[in-house]
Length: 270
Image (cartoon, rainbow, N blue to C red; front, side):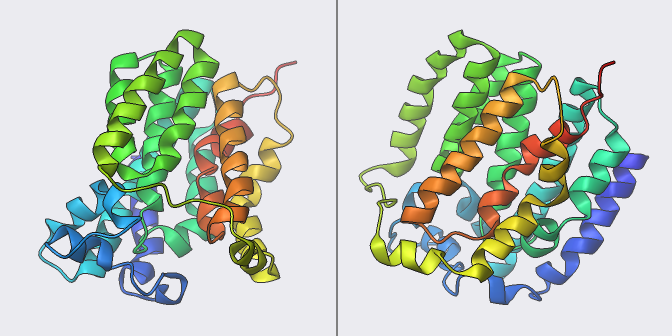
C-alpha cells in the first residue's frame, strides 16, 4: 500500500510537467526525437538513442506529450526499482520514497520531454539486478539501456564492482550500442564554447538541487556496497566529462538518485 501511495504522490508531483509547466526547462526541439521516429530524417543524437522516441511514437498524442508520458512511466518505474534496492540493502523504504519523490528533479524532469527518466530507470533496474546477482536480467536490461542512451554504460561499473567476471558484459553492451547507433558517430567531444556555457551559476544551482538531500545523507554513510559506490562514481565522472562536452544541468545529477537514495539509508552498524 505504501508503494501505491508513493506512486500516487509521484503522479501528482509530475502532473504539472506533463501539462507543460516545465517547458522552459526543455530543449525546444525535443519533439524531433519522436517525429524522426515517425518518418523524418534522423540526425545525431536522435538516431542513436532510439528506444524512448520509438516508444513515444506509438502513442496517439503530440510528440512532446508522448515523450512526457513515457518519462512519467519511467520515473514511476525508477522509484519502484530504487525501492527494491533499498529493500536489498536493509534501508527504510518509506524514507526512500520521500527522498525520491520530494525532490527538485522529480518535479522538474519527472515528466519532461527528455530521455533522462528512462536512463534513471535503466540504472536503477540494472543496479537492482546486479545486487541480486540476477545476471540474465542484468544482461537484458543492459541491452535495452544501450538503445536508451550511452550513459547507461555506468552499469558496467556497477556490475564489475559486484563481480569482476561481469566485465564480460562490456562486449554485449558494445554490440548493442553498435546496433543502436548504426553508422552515426559519437557526438560528445570537448568544446570550448560548451565549457564556457556550462560555467554559469544557474546551471550548477540546478545540479546542486538535483543531487539534493540524498547526496548529503549519502556522504555520511558507512559500509556502502561497492556497486553503489561504483555507480555514483560513474555519474560524477559523466558530469565531469559532460561539463566539457555537453549542456550540463540537473538531469545529469538526477541519475545519481539510483545510488544516493539507497546509500543514504544504509543502516549504521554498531
